[in-house]
Length: 364
Ligand SMILES: [Zn+2]
Image: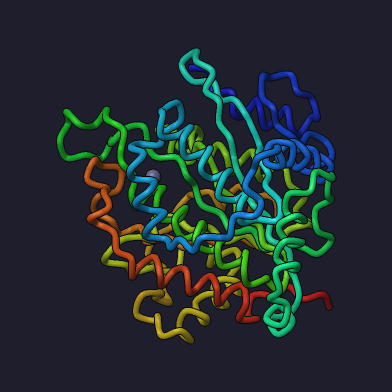
């Protein structure tokens, strides 16, 4: 097997697109993202797109059920391409900007197309002002602004990046039944849960403007390979494409749907960015969730936050790694709970609006 990932990363570093990888960022990350943005707007501003459609509040559980209904979402599967289309549609409806990043991964001689998808939410009027502007004209203007075909620069203020992987594992390699170990997993918790929370957050941010720009990123290819060198494919591409100076911090959600939810501090996160971990965990405690968000380390997890850490961005992983169905065919929705998704949703809303995280990165 030819592992092209390192070659692709090198290509990014060298600003040479020698490989068949369409990384939209070679030398000038911000410009490259603007190019992606233009492409995305070209897709979503097409005539007939329902700009007037009122946002439909959909909660994380609805989004989890929807993903599971697609079947396995591993790269190359029908569920994978359908979920990508859905992510783009939902973000097109809810976000100010939609960004996509295509890349190709070569595995056993096959070219496997992958795509990261992200939605950007810009700060708006304060809550008081927003409440005062409830007339129809304002709503129509806001919808029109979202579908502008004019290329728009990324925000000048640093954005909070909140991510989750949307792909599911192509093989249930930890299944107790050896006959099932080559089957793709449903990934209700591993893959589905983080995406579900992020999509509900998209709906929240569409109506309640954040105090700073927020980007919700959906990573492909996290769970593709059998070793850390063949995993985290999308987050590596994404981290390579952005300008670290543009990012306030990065918060990763992974496996947050377990009905028996207990989230310990993740080891790499605490050792590298203890202030960020403390800010999030203090917020959770303030909401009454100290019994779920425990203030001690239990696991060191290599995950999608590491590529961002390596670029110098304060990054943490919110993960419940004590999940007996991890990488088995039993990672199904009956092991998850709406309450768990709601707790994590509320902790992230507190991270955005509660002021603790912003205070860490306020200009001095
Ligand atoms: Zn996994």
